[in-house]
Length: 263
Ligand SMILES: [Zn+2]
Ligand SMILES: [Zn+2]
Image 1 (cartoon, protein in one colour):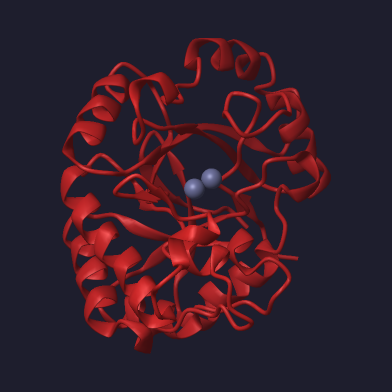
Image 2: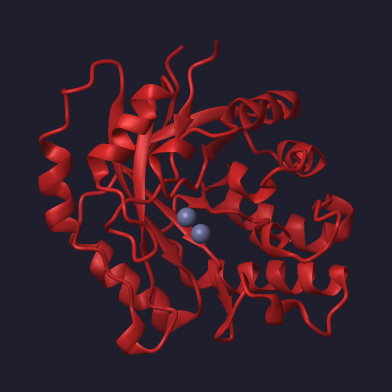
């Protein structure tokens, strides 16, 4: 069995999750993971009254007593930042500059105030157009938020799309994928394979990962996007197999530095 890492999970320090960090770590231990990282939501992409800002000090208080309590697994500290323009990025960077984290995911969840996870977002658009609109927003967002270590769920739009076949293909937007990959590679960043996007469907993305490799990508991170202990590590064997098939190494991050996963 290959060593596995889950670098995208949420605890009760996220607005949309309710399980304490220890419960999530227990889920990771049960799954036999080598590396685990909590990446609670940090969202400034909404009106000020709705900002989601985790209490990182309180979270650290809970995590520090778990270090070493579970032999064989490393517990990382991270955040998932919603990317949506310069103001949002500036606030996130200010807050992150005072923290010692291992890993920061930059993700697009909203476009001009519209929630990508809601059905209304897809109304009036063709599948191709809406997938492209999402990738175009990623491109605009990356320029504003160079602090990220990895681009989270590039296929978030496919995850919530209301189509019988939601699969995302490189041919849906080759120009936009290339632009995103160029930016990531020039800036020393990488891509995440997010297993939650597939829900119960077959995994997609091999053609996309192969193109990333062809353009010079060497590694990726894996994330389940678990919001409960039972989903920690879910479908990451399949995600790891995709990475391997594309010729990409799976890495973890310590102090914002990619590290090979020890076998
Ligand atoms: Zn997300
Ligand atoms: Zn997430």
